[in-house]
Amino acid sequence: MNPAVLYPSRFGNLVQLLFFLGLAALALWLLIDFSGRLGAAQTLPPPAATYPDPTPGILFDETLALHRDEPGPGETIRFLILPIISIPVLLWLATVRVRRLFSGKPLGEVANGKLILRNGSTCNTREIPLSAIRSVLCDRADRVKSRSGVHAAGVGALGARLGARLRWSLQITCSGRPGEDCEVRISDLEVEGGREQLAGFAEYLTALAGLAKQDPQSA
View 1: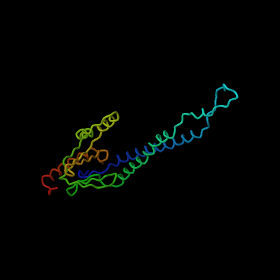
View 2: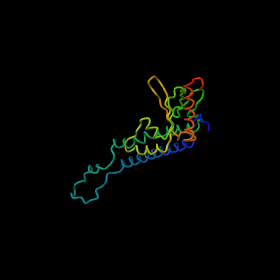
View 3: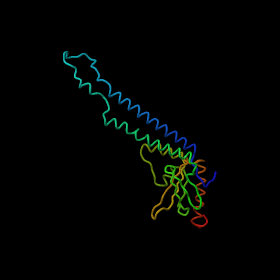
View 4: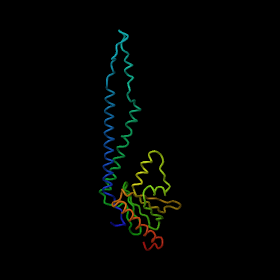
C-alpha cells in the first residue's frame, strides 16, 4: 500500500459499528423493560392480608399495604437516566463509523509538503507543515502513553493496560502556537493495513519531516 496515505479500516469500523449498535439496542431494551416493569408495579393492587386477623371486627389497616418495596421517583430517574443518555451517544458513535466506511477519504496523507489529517467525527481537515513536525513515534500503545507521561491508575485501568499492549499507536507531535505543542494519535485499529501500514507511514513521514527541516523547498 501507499506509505503516504492512511485509509480508514473497513473491518475495524464495521466491528465497532456492530458493537455500538449492539450496546444501543441493549440500552433501549433495558429502558423499555424497566419502564414496563415500573408501570406494572404502580398499577398493582395493595396486597391482601394472608394471616389470621387477630382483631376480628376491626378493618385491616390499608396503610400497611402501602409500604411496599417499590422504587420512588428519585430511584426511577436514576435507573432510567443511564440508558436515556447512552442511547444517543452510542448512535452518534455508530454514525461516525458509518461515515468512515462510506466516505472513502483517508484519515491522513502527506501531500504538497503538508500532513493532512481528517477528523472522522467532524469531517474537519487539518493541514500541518512538515517542517512543524517535531517527532513521530510508532510503537505499542502502552509504550507510547508511558513516553507521553500518561499513566492509567485504578482497578478499571487494568483492562486498559492489557488492551494497550495488544495495540499499536502512531503519535505525531508538532509545533503549534508559540510555547504550545499539539499531539495527534492514530491507532492501528483505525487504519487499513494495521500495524504495518502505520509503521510505513511513520517512516515515510519521519524522512520527509527531516528533509523539510533541512531544506523547506525539498518537501
